Length: 491
Image (cartoon, rainbow, N blue to C red; front, side, top):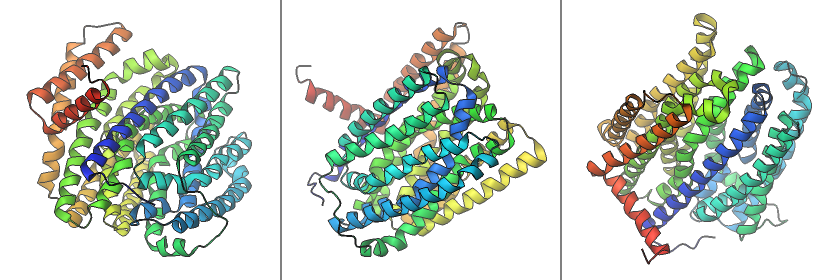
């Protein structure tokens, strides 16, 4: 099922390029669609669909059951492996959708929103449809088909985003967000079927699924834990706060997630296949991992802390003043979001080393402690959303220490090595953006201030990278230069 004779370095560079192009384009499109929808819809509309996210994601975890990662770890997967996973996903999805359809009234009652009965039953169709393309998605990730993944994602986002905007303009309110989700996954699956050579057969054999189950079950439970971790605040807020406040949090979390996904998504498409390919050589695996960590820091800190810097102007200019209450939430979330891509790297290291047990228990410890802290903060200290979000964000950053302990165990990555890989980029970014903040204090117009902060911050960051002769920056610059000259040889 695999045929890729190119050297690992070349494959990794090409995959990173297409992953960055994919995620960069997706973020730009998400910004454009998100801005238009934010101006057409209300916080309440976002709150209605936002509280359903946790159910959709957990259902999605149950349907895939960790078999996508299990397929990537096989050397190489056979057609019968993909076929077995395909039919397992379809059968599991039909069963789960039936359960959720019956539970829709209970969900609506829990959040005190009767409209959720019909909305939830429709939104949950998205994960039912997605079951038809999970095995194909695993095939594309395993074979590092990141160019094709980029094309599919962009087309799917264009179709779903246009649908959402038209419906919102016509006055369909929260239904526009619901239809956007269903259209996106439908087009995504059509693209996967177009590009992937393998297609399922009617011969159903769950033998391969049983053989992968021991590894996949840990991934399943961990994915559920990660989903709870990422959505627990929306769930709690949906129960205890007015739906408009939930909408403000959902809007802030949406932009934070889109920004850190630019980095996490880029690395996710590359990290596990690359780390699996060098798993037999621990020293090489350590070198590859450290380089990926430096690249992550190089991208993540300026993107996420840059959003903290421009949050007020961004919301005022782009989203409108009706979203002003989400500004402090967005800033706090983005500080923690700057560290989220490192979770992707550490988690993929554990999976690449076939230690899904460590992957599971490290995430279990995080979510148990996190939920306890959030509830303690809510009931004993403050019922303010911003306080709860701040506690959540601080803990998220601190828990990276647990993942570093895992890396120390797996590849002997020392604490000092990890700090030396990450800290310089954090310090440079903080210094650059502090200078940018004070240098632009005199600008009063929000549009001018937003543009000035973005341009000055980016220029200073690039200048410092060049003056300091940062190796990862030089390699990225050289790769992009070669890519540009290859397409435009007359330059």
